[in-house]
Length: 365
Image (cartoon, rainbow, N blue to C red; front, side, top):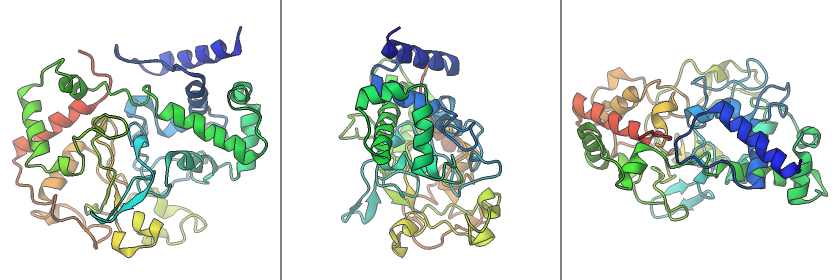
């Protein structure tokens, strides 16, 4: 059998066994994307084996943690990073990190704290990181890639790599091809059908959308304008904000070894402020897409909120009923203009949650 068709067959088998898709689902169509998917699902690329990209970014939860853990566990039992695994879908369209002097905010970058400037650079970090896939070095990862069943296809597609770094660039490119494909970013939510005027919203969904655009101020950051590059509505402007999220006392990162977390229980996550070494941005994290938000709990960078209902209530009354919530983890730079006292009724909170439920992919008519 031709190797290319064998490879595509493997991808189709993985797809059919992992999830059921709606009528607009488009299978992997080119070899780079097919190779990228096999890498994404490959559990042999961790140390010890058993952890793949899909382990923390599963299709059924919008490519977020299928176990809904506050912080996802790495390949080594008991290994945890400091940050929640966000849904990859749609967030992968984040542009190259840059600074917007007009709005005085960073835009783009990958990871919620923006520590990677772009997607291809980001894709390598989890393979090497001790609290993720724990390979320790590029050389160890390359050794495993060369033993993979798809290595022949990788070389046929990209050519023979002259260095380990060149081979890793092929891996990153193939993964980026898969992660930006329609399989990961299908734009098949009820909102998408509504936006195309193919279906109608219920009364509560329509009212929730109106609140989203108006009283709830959601659309100020989770914008409804089509993205210039994709032509699609991504529900984020990829800016950074400190919304006053409290510390998650159950964050397992506090209990990691001093080699990983020297500060122990005193660790404070400064977000992009620590990445760029600029205190005026302390506590700020990238605004995520709201697509698949209803199925990708827990929420915020530290997983401190477990339900969408809690998140909406926090946005609504954070500054009105501060005793309901713990003190913000980072007190400086808290946004007090776009949330905290939105004056939504309990019914409006519920209608907003109903609308956000229309952003889940693979809606069946």
